Image (cartoon, rainbow, N blue to C red; front, side):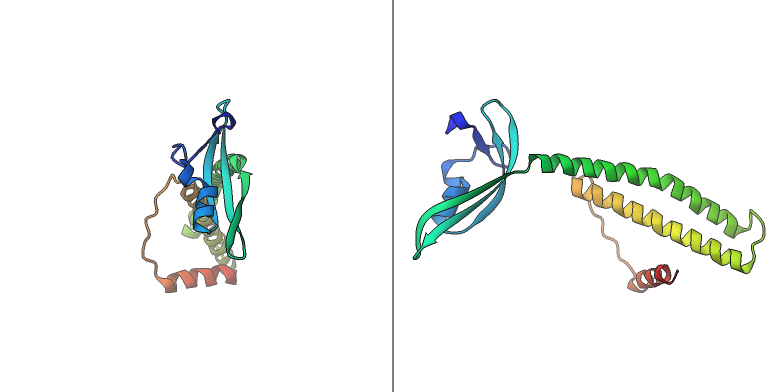
Length: 172
């Protein structure tokens, strides 16, 4: 009914009668769970998750149950979460890089000669900081992947090196 608004597909095209979730569930006898847009008569737009399920009694279709959930705010919350992760990651990266650089200075001897125990501690600080930088970078990458602003470029990984790195981190 046009006076109630208009259901749109994910490409913002009006959904024809034969493609409505209740029509598909009624004709196929199968459940449907899809995301749609809805444009109210005042122009307000919503993002809806619609679950359509046929009601069958003795093998005969008696009706269709629609469960509609407004997920418009979910999109906004997801965007806010990604912005927060991006901001936090970028703000963490600078001090972690400084700590790593100071660790490099200590290990190179530029700040003086270290005892064996001091060197072991400096190595642990350096390695842990490098690991934290990797975690921050991974967090930022995950956020970018979720938002669709990054494309994956898988690289071969030596499993032995990965396991040794994890074992070293856990040993600390």
